[in-house]
Image (cartoon, rainbow, N blue to C red; front, side, top):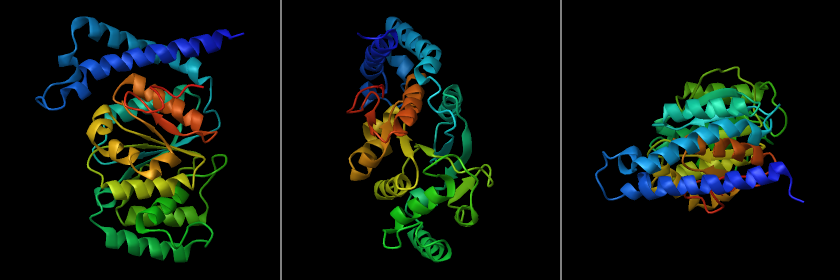
Length: 290
């Protein structure tokens, strides 16, 4: 027999799929090839606007019940790319808290890191850090950006419970900050078992894929999230075409409450290492339930 909770979860999945259809049909993806100044709200008629507003309110209200405290005792390391939508970051942080967790630390990735413009610096620093920290922490034979992704992961993440950074993690974290490849909101932040990387604009595809692949080996779970435009023809779309995407969970539409809830449900799902591609453009469905 189907339980009440299973029924609600199924109903929500269908509802979110319909809501995502409204966004796709009248929102950012339908604007491709049109005037870039048009917003999603401009292209929705009054009925669709009411439906979307209701979907957002529904998602915000139902989210805590859907999370069911699924992130308790599992903090999140928040990584942000240049050009990230700060309103989306604020919304994601609130949803992480609604799931019973907190952001252990925020780390802003530098333009020089993600653009690939400072590969020599990244390669040299990575080589030096491999020699300084325990040999078992990082694959010395990894390519430049996979290696720096592993090092970044060692600096912010863990494969178990949240824990204080050891001397190796502190060395890597301080070196990345000193090289201006990363900015840390709290250099003493605990290591977190889950990592949420929120995309912005114009990351070099091979760099992003390498970083994601490296991060995936150092944390319990990694979720990479972006907005609808990023999934249509941007960084998230590029990542999803790379094999590195199979190592993590990707979610699009995080400029909306629906997308933010989906991203946090993806973090809960990543605890068991299930992965997948979710959102309005996700091949695995609109929302990671079940």
